[in-house]
Every structure is written in C-alpha cells, then in structure tokens.
Image (tube, rainbow, N blue to C red):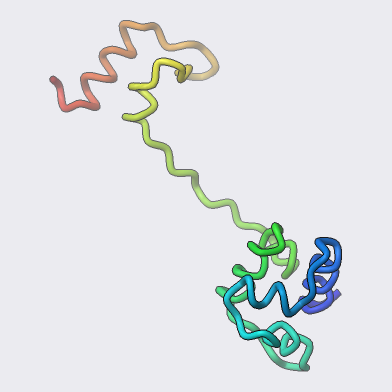
Length: 109
C-alpha cells in the first residue's frame, strides 16, 4: 500500500477528506493528491504533519522501521518528586542513599 493509499485509508476511518487533512496539517488543499503521482516524494515534515492530524505515527504511513530514540529523563526533578520510586537493579534505593544522591545532584549542598 502506498503512502497516498494509507493516508486516504486513515482519513476515511476518521471521517475526513484528504483536503481536510491537508488543511489541518498546514498544507495546500490538494497537497496530498500530489503524493499519488509517480516519483513524487513528499517532505518528512509534511508526512509528520499529516500523521499528527490523523493520529498515527510517521512509521504507520511510511512503513519505515521505527527507530527508538533515547528517552530524556530529568533525574533532578525525579529526585525531588516524593512520588517517584527510585530503584537500582530492581531493588529500592534506601532513603539515606537517595538523600546523598540528591545532595550530589544539587552540587554538594
């Protein structure tokens, strides 16, 4: 199934026309129809915008393999949150060690 066909399928499932999808994605009204032309390759930002409007991933539309990006984690913020459970190798970190880690993260204060 081509990118155009998948986009059309997801739009139909959501009760939208391709023109509606294009406009909501900030593209020209007939932009998605160009995707059906042989040899035409839309830009990644255009595909991402359409995927967002349709509530699907870029990979759902393109069939590219998803590359897992490393997650960003704010350890300092997590350490200050009393509801965050900290563990190491599956075992809870004792409160006294958590306090030591907090002091290190705060610059030894």
